[in-house]
Image (cartoon, rainbow, N blue to C red):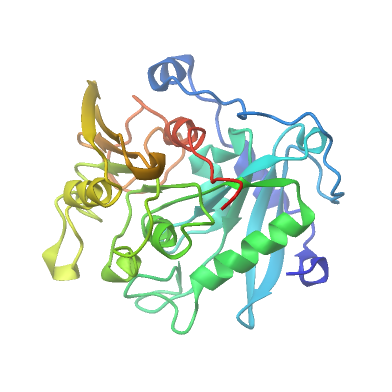
Length: 324
């Protein structure tokens, strides 16, 4: 996608206001999660791709993909102009939500990375709600895998992105798409971290043939929307079985488990191509973004961890081979 296909909209005050609501994690939460919010192997060469957007800001953009006008919010981190190689995180909202809302509750914009928050197309079913490919209520004829490819091409054309450190995350329906991208675009994303994913059959297309991919899954055990134990009527798998399936697929040799109050973390290592698998289960947790200080869904929100810091810790351990 050439720069002429990318149109910068007026700086959206609403976007900035929502982003400002993202609170700094508490010292307790940071200590418990042991994250490192510094960017790994940071370059000291200034960014040579000029942009009208200021560092430490969020702007809304539009692009055309599949003859459909799509939109997304792009967050540039503080000091963006001082480096030529930034990690990129793409975060997909849940059904009926927006990219602006995900930026508001996720705290991903606090990370030392460029973050894109795309908007889905209007899906089917009750209400006029945005949705993503892979669910039974997806927008007919909309290819969100192709849209993702176009989105990345547009961002990488005009911004200083390290293409070996591109990652996908999301919540609910958006997390289901992130899981699908691990199967459909395995040589694009270095790691994927779905949160409370809606893992309908359409999100599992091509996964059996996909190469090993690092996967982090975060889920509330008391999630009433996407049940942790699965839902046979909707063909939703039990989350522990789905995660174990990825560990087996990635050829992982062993697993370790640790518990911190209401959070149990299982990690599979010794995997093919270093594609570790990690599962974070929140006892009593609802259909939410764990650690969030702003509403993200129904049910209990733990503050034992913060999803953004757990996700960043996981992403920071993985990058694509520069030869891939």
